[in-house]
Amino acid sequence: MSSTTHTSNSTMRSLHDRFDFPHLLAATLVLVGATILLGVAAKATGSGLGCEANWPRCDAGPFNLFPAHIVSFYEWFHRFVSMFAGFAIIGTAVASIRLADVDRRVTALVVLGMILTPIQVALGRETVQQYTTDILSLHFWTAILIFTLFVVATILVWAPRLTGGQVTTALIVGALTVPVHVGLSLFYLSPGASYPPRVQIAQYGVSLAVVSVGVFVALVGRRRFDKTRVRSVLSVSLVLAYLTVFFGRQSVAGFNQLVDITYLGLATVLTVTFAVGVLLTRASSRS
Image (cartoon, rainbow, N blue to C red; front, side, top):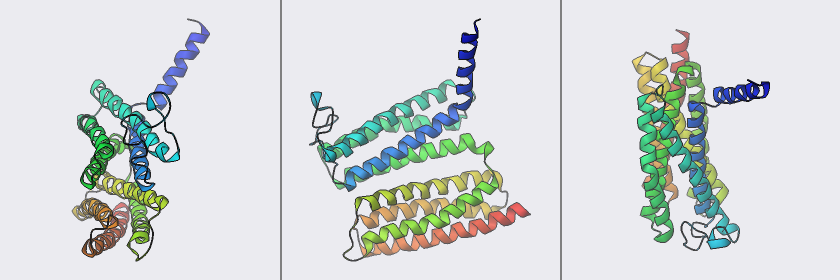
C-alpha cells in the first residue's frame, strides 16, 4: 500500500471519528431549528407569499427557480434550507436504522420525524396556496414537534457524556432566558407598540431555547439525580416550558387579555421553577 493511500485512509478514519452519528444527529437538529427561524423570518417580513404563491418554484430565473427580489428571497431561502433539513432528517433516520449500536428509542424518534417531514412539507405548500391562520399554526406546531423529537433523540445519544453540573447550568440558562422571552413579547403586548421582524425572530429563537432547556433538564436530570423531589421539579419545568411557549405564541397572535395574563403567569412560575431546580440540583450534587 502506498503512503498516499495510507494517508488518505487515515484521513477518512479521522473524519469518521470526529463526525459520527451523534454529530450527524446534532447537525440535523441545527438545520431543523434554522428552518423554523427562517420560516418565522419569512412570515415576520411579510414574505410568506413573496414567491407569488408559486410552490415549490419562486418568481424568477429559469423555470422560476430563483427569487426576483429581497421579499421573495426570504421565502426562497427558507425553502432552500428546508430542503437540506429534509435530506438530513431522512439521512439520520436511515443511519439510525442501519447502525446496530444506535438506541432503538433514538431510531423510533428520528423515524417518526422522517414520517412527519412530508406532512410538514405539504402544510408548507398549503400556507402558500391557501393561506389561513389554522394552516399556519398547524405548520408551526408540526415543526416544533419535529424539533422536539430531534432534541430528545440528540440528548439521549449524548446523555452518557452529560453531567449533573450541566443540568444545573441549563437551569440557570433557563431562569435567565424566560424573562428575555417575556421582554421580547412586551414589544407586542404594550399598547401601541410595534412588533418588528427582528424581535419576532429573536423571540422564536428564545422559544426554541426554552423548549430545549426543559427537555434537557428533564431527561438528563432523571439520569443524574435520584431524589424524587429533584426529578419532580425538573419534570414540571418541562411541562411549564411548553405551556409558556404555547401561550406566548397565542398571546402575540393577539387572542385576548386572559391569554396574555396566563402567559405572563406561566412564565413567572417557570422562572421560579428553574431557580428552585438550580438550588435543588446544587444541594443534591453536594450531598
